Length: 238
Figure 1 (cartoon, helix red, strand yellow):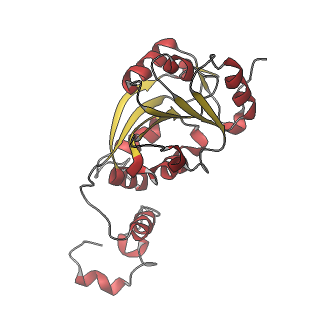
Figure 2: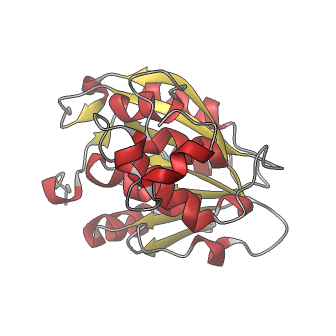
Figure 3: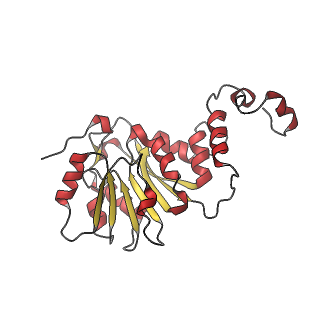
């Protein structure tokens, strides 16, 4: 049975073999790696990677695709498939030894940002991440300050990671072709962190409110967190 892409899961199946080869080359897997794939799909990356990796864990939400992956699973392969929602998945359960996690995947456009924020919670046990995302999101991930793409996603991702844009992926590399160009980005968690927040929850709230209304001054955007008169006592232009 051929599985058709489902719009509710934001599915676009990668099919371009040259792009697949470039992604695997960028990932540069080693047999000893603890590799985790988010969204195995129909196995476009999964099965070529199994030829180079000793083991691979896949997290797939679509139960029909889980069944297809299980059916195609090579005999005696160390492929573990979790039928689960990556947004709810506890990635800490996959760290069984001293090896850090190497997470990769073609992230569904409709949940890219919340999924990245979820995975960032596990940054201390992650070696690196290689994600395919909508190009617009990729530009926000790697944006520097004073750039129009710079925002909450840029700040929080770059707090945890070094972000690098590798290459673009055209729509015709997928079935069905999306209406946008995709990009491959690499995120490497800082070790150690160049700056460390004393209160992570407070930092997250601050950044969220600071970028929530871009047309307003910081004085107004952050009024829910700090009284306006406080600005006269700190060296920041509100």
